[in-house]
Amino acid sequence: MTPNETLDLHGFRHKEALELVQDTLQSLDRQGSFSLTIITGNSTVLQQRIFEEILQQTPYHYYVPGWNLGQIVVSFTSL
Image 1 (tube, rainbow, N blue to C red):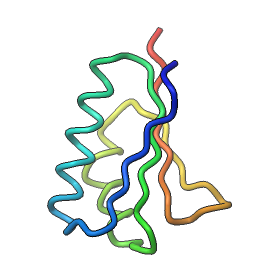
Image 2: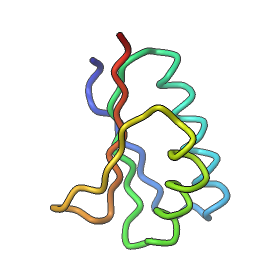
Image 3: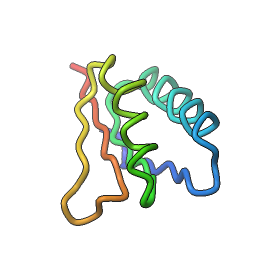
Image 4: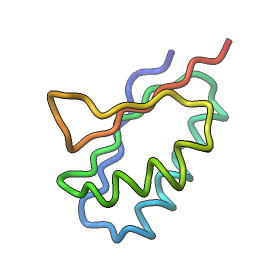
């Protein structure tokens, strides 16, 4: 598995942030297995949009860590 990648969405508008998340996931998916930490900060609205508009339609595992509610950790293991 590749090292954990980080995507910081501070300063991006929601539309731009969603496009960046989608593009990053597509790029990482082409490489095979990955782990990605998406930093959303305090925007629960952005987190919800990422869940509903992107992640729920993918085979990736994802969660919000209890130690940092401003992140989403996404992982995928290619067999």
